[in-house]
Image 1 (cartoon, helix red, strand yellow):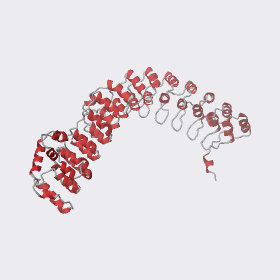
Image 2 (cartoon, one colour; image 1 turned 90 degrees about the horizontal axis):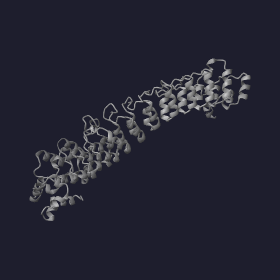
Image 3 (spheres, one colour; image 1 turned 60 degrees about the horizontal axis):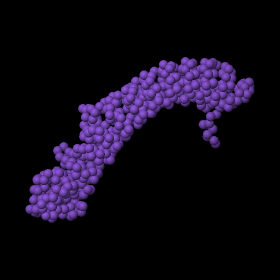
Image 4 (cartoon, one colour; image 1 turned 90 degrees about the vertical axis):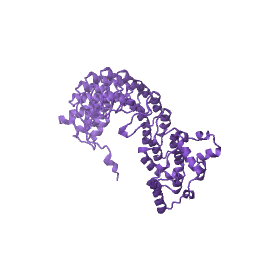
Length: 509
């Protein structure tokens, strides 16, 4: 059984004749008494076939033959009249025949589309002229979304049709359901000639959609340089905020989407209060959010701050925090190059994302050690990566971090034996606080942990001296070997201060 038959475009013999433009065959069929109003499985009648296939003679005959005046208004299952189909195909003569016979130029399909809109959509300017002469309305909605003929012509960059519509008094500021105007559409799709024509007819260069986006904003987002240049030259405001949160400007869109050439235009004209102003957000965040390294460097080179004000909507205290939210780690070297501040929270983020090379780099670049409100979060992150302790813990402890901060219940109970023993090497294990002693004792009883033998004895005088000397040194002196290597001490003592023996014992390079 052939199931495709149910889906083929089956039409009557009269419909076939109209489709092929065979006027003699059509005359014979009508003379024989065949009906002209039998629909096919799409709801198409012979009049639709004739109009769609530009069969002018057949169309005239069908209109003359029809017994009802409503025949010319008959619709397909999609709500299209013969006039819609003729306008879609650009059949000027068929369109003229239908209009003279009384077809309504403002009839709507199921999707609320007029013949005028269909003609504009298919760039048939001759048909557009004809429909306008017969009373087609240029204003009002011509689709379910409220997009009308001027929107469509602007999108198609059909400037000849746009001129026809503008000459007929179409509303230049007509909006669809989203508050979008024809100028906005032209800016969104990079139709520079449409923009030029609309502006020459007085269109508002700073119109805003319902979400407050402007033509300059959307063209910056989409990367249409020529459009952005034209809009700016005609008075587009680069400082007009473009959403309800009142922070996003065209410069943010350009930075986030990597539109470097447009960003170069906007950097020169955008008010710098967006970089530091209260309640505002720096475009540096946008560049980091989009991972657009070239845009980020451009902004920072132009004087935007690598330590821009907090962006509370996203819960970011700095652009460096945004790096870890978006995982666009390629932007880190650029932020550091332009002086981004680092703190213990960033070290915690490095552990959370297992970015151990960044962790070590941050310590080398003078990142402050976890303290205060950052300590609790840091301990949680550290516990999750305790198995990789060789990648980060030595650098942290050698930088002067107090190991007692780690010796809470969660750390002691979660880490493996090596990690716990290594941590204790950096303490005076006989002078730990009573609470830490109790935790260690309880852990020994409830687990297989075996402390190093020397933890049961009093630390040597040399270890006491090492701890004391290291407490006297500033943190920046401890972050690299160079400072201790320059002390007037034998190499073996320098190695001792740097815990070289301990590192070798635990297999740490």
